[in-house]
Image 1: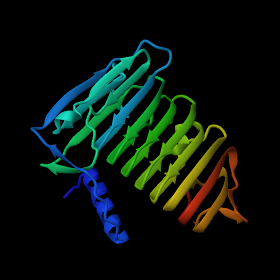
Image 2: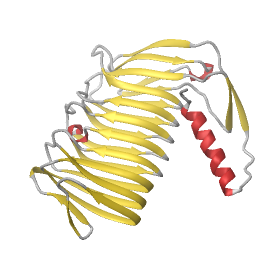
Image 3: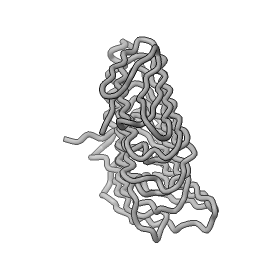
Length: 288
């Protein structure tokens, strides 16, 4: 049976509290589910030279892909909590789509089967995309879009993100900040970024830089107690500098080690990676 991410987060908090022997009296808030509602979402392209799209999503399931070129954002929102009704705010080139005005101030007690599902398609119009989310499941196919920047910030999450095709414009910065999560990032070579910053708490993280690296790129990774897997295509000129506490580094494929630096000797642009881990395990792999 599939569990809601928000319930998993609450259960995790309860387990940690019991393990530490600490009593925490948190306020409880009851969420009443209602009949399932499905709304069509269609946000026209703003008449602006600079478009900033923000998706503010709480708990639930969020899917993104390329899609209808007649709108900036199109798709559906399905939910069964009244206050999760999506809200759209447009101010010139600034567009914000959010999950209503629901605020959870304590531990939620949910009556019924909680549902909040967004299935959205984005146009290939050049834009800056920001995703702010809580405890949720994300499935993002961003190949073929034109993202000038990508900024993702979420809590306890389960996310798979893929650039199966090249990003159509140069991306200045890709930033991902997350809590205790399971994150799988694929096709990052196709993201066409100059710099990437990935910061995380405890969890499992996979960063796959497959795709076409068209220019020099720098990646900064900061992680707590975690399992981190970095995969780079064989023959991609790569330099990785590692700094960590109680961390173990395992390599396979074409990685070579010299002190705290690891490298793959190749041709073309250089991928420079800085990794700072508190503790855990770092795996360096290569792919064909």
